[in-house]
Length: 173
Ligand SMILES: Cc1cc2nc3c(=O)[nH]c(=O)nc-3n(C[C@H](O)[C@H](O)[C@H](O)COP(=O)(O)O)c2cc1C
Image (cartoon, rainbow, N blue to C red; front, side, top):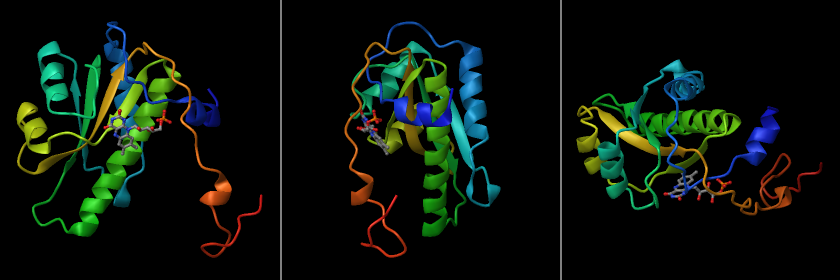
């Protein structure tokens, strides 16, 4: 699949069929995440794959932004040093966000629907997944075979967000 086709065709999917995601496909998604860029190539991300019904129910319970129990979750975490400053925190969030996009695009190519979520109770998710003290859940990706085919939500025009040389100077194609 063409990269631009995947970028434009991927949608946030919030309704899933009951069909489980094959292990080798989950592995492929983790591989996509592993090859994401990371600041200083630190690769401090950690990925917890959740497929058991009991764990999925629990994660969903503490994630109000997730509307249906998905077939799987990949909880993207960061292993954070005790003395991590604000810059490091930003770096880890950026790294985990980029890894999540790799997962979502690779999933789209395989016909798997995804949605990323930030609205979850961090402490509850940490407890459910038995994360060590120094590991923080940064993003949750829900996964499953799509049971919906949503229209693309509109995007603002490039002219409203892109500038040439100076902020406010019109970007000319
Ligand atoms: C950082 C982030 C957090 C998001 N959190 C949620 C969420 O909690 N629940 C949800 O249903 N969608 C969530 N989304 C999905 C957005 O609503 C979605 O990407 C946006 O509406 C554009 O739709 P599209 O992904 O189909 O292009 C989130 C997306 C991002 C990037």
